Length: 382
Image 1 (tube, rainbow, N blue to C red):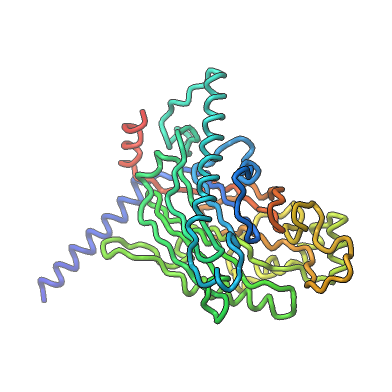
Image 2 (image 1 turned 90 degrees about the horizontal axis):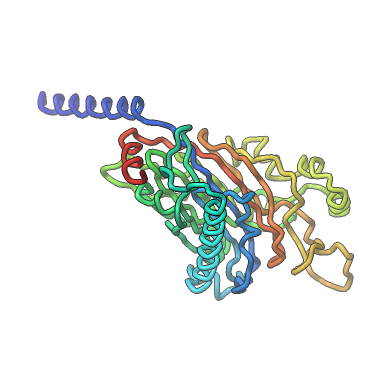
């Protein structure tokens, strides 16, 4: 028995020592995250699709890009039963790879022409933030569930410090389990900080009761998502144990009569509309999304547009059609949870590929880096 007590004391001392080491020797560095979400309406990406509108970041590249898509395949009966269509996801990844690295090449070439050196230590700077001076981007993970697709890209010098990647998919659609609705979540650790990105497509509809179904979807995603563990690592397994960004077609609508909503949209009365936005109400009331945050919205509703048009669906009062009404709404959203995240930008793109407009956000994220890792950075990139 005394042997067991002694062993426990040694283990506790070791654990306490490890905590003290992390507390005293870790530094906080800043990382720039680009996050976007786009419901592409089941339309395959044309080879000439210009991704620069989606990836626009005031000519400054981020350190990590997180891109989420919904309906990358039509949500028909045949596709719902197929979890992955690698040909479509590969097309998106090919376009993203080309766009990210082309933009990086142009920016670095421009710096060279101006005589600016980009041979700096990456990713740390003296003022304690990650730099944007590195070669190319590489995909660290991508995953599809029916129409939901998330793909994450990082600057190549960051790759040795990204560990413990894990994916968890939750189907909330037909029968409460199929993947026409639900989420694909990705977890990874960068140095000593764990991040989670949830890409989701929640229940649709503007009828009474549809909001409750969306809330139920969100609750299921939070409760059913579980990441892999490691017996030798104390890794977080649930969404809220990370620094979290949730993106997707959340499908929340505006609780106003359709004529009133359309009139306010025409007059660009965003504040009045947002006072009646379902998701804003959920964030205020702290029910489904207690503790979550969203930056102020200063752009037009992202849904629903006529294809290849700047006109909202139904704006011309078409008659004779028996289709459902589609009142404008901010269906496409990016929200976040965590003390180490700060949102710097929230905007939308203007691609007319689908009936949704993409949304995008820029975050500064705090990353805990051990001092030994800092020394390794200097040796590797000096």
